Image (cartoon, rainbow, N blue to C red; front, side, top):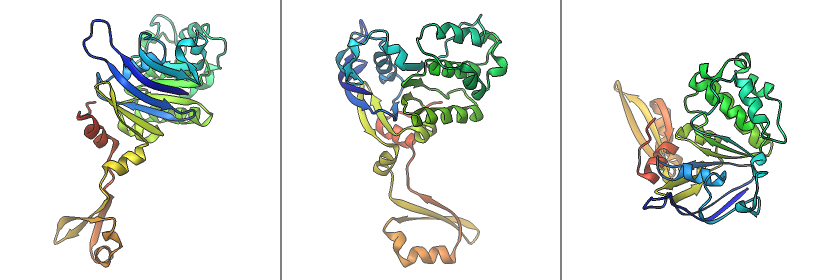
Length: 283
């Protein structure tokens, strides 16, 4: 869907590049995670890809054609959900969606979407009376309004309760299953792990890693199994390498001890984020 080569961008009057010579591609039909600490260049990259920022260096191809060669028909192809939900607060949810519907040639029936995210009963309520979570869900529906081929989702489940978060994640997976492509930024690493086919880590405007979550866990994790068992009233922990778990000593331990837990040494995406970026996650 996108090929990005040597992308650089500097804001007016800024000394440093916000995005400093990055290369990546987003394959059709994948959920591509774009991760990094605040100020790393995530939002800038997204704004360039959706044609909000134009004076960049490098080359971007969208479906094999230069992004700069697309006119406004490009916006029929994409749906965007910004982190800060934007709606007209004096209009109802339906009036908001009707306003945006007029901007597109092709749109979908919003009733199934609103029912799915739990907003159908509140469709005639002014969005100024909506909670933050309701506004985010409405934002998500608006991103799907024009039946896009490509979704840009910025922190889509931040501020959403677990039940609605699961519904939205299911809808994102279904969008991919129907051939859609997703560019996802999030600080909720469990969501990234659940959803993304590949992730890129960007730090100080440069990409440090691009790979699948599984491959990153294999690269950064320890190939060990940790066994916790009770002995003389205490919990004892012992680690075995992947080679050692094939030995009689490991089986003897399992047979003779009161085992409480078994853990692989697989690391988490949160740990990888901290290792790759050098920045701890907040919130």
